Length: 172
Image 1 (cartoon, rainbow, N blue to C red):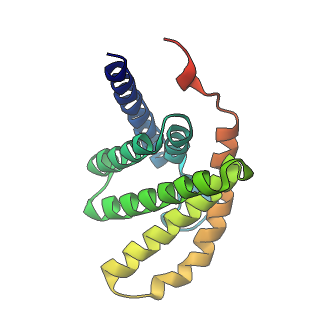
Image 2 (tube, rainbow, N blue to C red):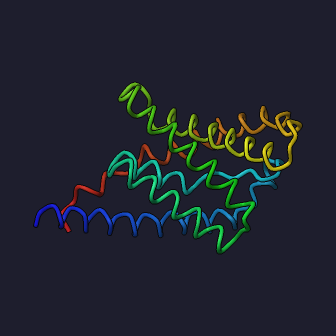
């Protein structure tokens, strides 16, 4: 019975956090970041706050579930098949790097470091998708600017995570 309760609790957390990640994604679509940083496609990565939070406080499988579900639903609401490919590849690569950092570096890397590396891997994944879709490496020239934005945006997202308490341990 206790195992079933744990699975139900995990499923409920995944549903709530997927909805929260989706809300962050939709909110981010309203923020005109290109006004301040004139790079096409640049985003702050607010939904990554939720994914990394779930990774650290619930688990890896749940974090991947939240990320994949958010990418699917957000693409259905806001995007297209192309945006889905960019979002999913970037999100999975970003989360994979975060999982590896969490396992390998443990407490030696802060949320800020994890988010900066995650944002960089997200951009690498998107560049890889772009190269595959268009059959050219010309977009790689855009990578230094994207990596610079990864440091800034990843740092902001990691900073936000530093202030969030672990709400998963509270009794409901």
